[in-house]
Image 1 (cartoon, chains in turn yellow, blue):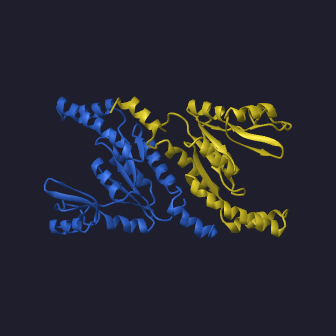
Image 2 (cartoon, chains in turn red, blue):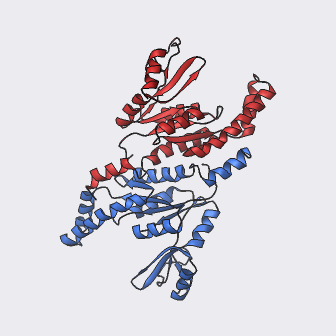
Image 3 (spheres, chains in turn yellow, red):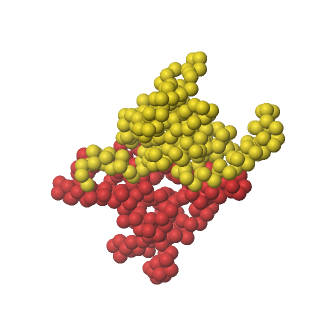
Length: 207
Length: 207
C-alpha cells in the first residue's frame, strides 16, 4: 500500500451502532506497525488491571487543566466530575511515524476533533435499522419501553449529524462494515493530497 | 456492500502506466451485475471480430456529429480522421441500473469527462518509476533513444495533471494497485452524498 504520513480515522456514530466492535475487528486485521489506536487521557482513577499508557493516560486534574490551557487536546469532555480527552501530541507522534491512528468517539467528540484537526477522516457508523436497534434494546430487558423509545428518537436525531462526516458505513453485516472501513483507510491513502505530492516528488523528481 | 446508484470511475494516466492491465484485472474480479465497462462510440470501420455494442458502438460520421450537437458525449476526440467518444446516455443508463461504470481513457479525455460529469471519480494511474518506464521502452527495442527521452519527458509533464484528479495509484505492484482501485470504488460508495442520504431516508425514515 502506498503510504507516507499516517492519517487519523475517527470512528463515531450513535451508541448501539456497533462502533466498538468494528474498531476491534479493524485493529485485529491491521498491521500493528502501521495502525494504532488513540489512547485517551483521563483524570479518573485506574481500575484494577488498567495500565497507564495502554488503557488510558492517567493524570491529575491539575495536569489535565494545564493541557487544556495549552491547547493540548483534539477534544475533551467532562463526564461525572472526571475529564476525558484525546491528547494531540500522542496522535501527532504516531501520524509522523507513518502510522494511521484510529479514534473511537461519540458524535460530539468527533465534531470537535474535525474542528481541531480538519485532516481527520470522519466515519459515521450507522445502526442496521431502527427495528434491529429496538429489538436489541428490548431484548436486553433492562429498559422500560418509554426509555427505549426515547433512546431511538435520540438516535434518529443523531443521524442528521452525518452531513458533517466524510463517510457513512451501515453496520448491517459486521464483516462487510469492517471491509468498508478498511477500504476507506486504503482509499484515503490514494487521495490526491500533500502526502501523495511528496511521494510523486520523491519517485519521479520535480514535475 | 452498501449501494444505490452506480458511480462512474475514470481510470486514466500517462501511457505506459499500465491502466489497461489494471482495468482488466478490476473487471475480472468485479461482479458483472454490479460493474460495467464503458463502451466507446466510433466512426471507424469495425475490424474483423469486433462487434457493435461490445467492442465499440459503430456509427456513421453524420450520426456522430448529430450526437455531438445534441450534447450526447461525456468526451470525444477526432483521431486520424475518425471520431471516438463516450456516449453519455449509455453511461447514465448503467449508473441508473445501480451499476458502477469504469471508463479507461487518456488524460485529456478524463479532464473533459470531469467537466461534463463532475460526479465522476478520477483515478490517476502512476507508472512504477521513470527508471522502470525507461527500461520498458528501451527493452522493446522499437524506439530510438531520443524518442524514448521525449516520451519520458512528456510523461513527467503529464504528472502535473494529477492535481485535477481525486486519487492517484502507483502501479508498482499490479496486485496492490488493483486492490487500491477496488478499495476506492468501495469507499466511494460510503461517501456522505445524495446516494447515502437516500439510503438513510429509506432505512431509518426522515431524520
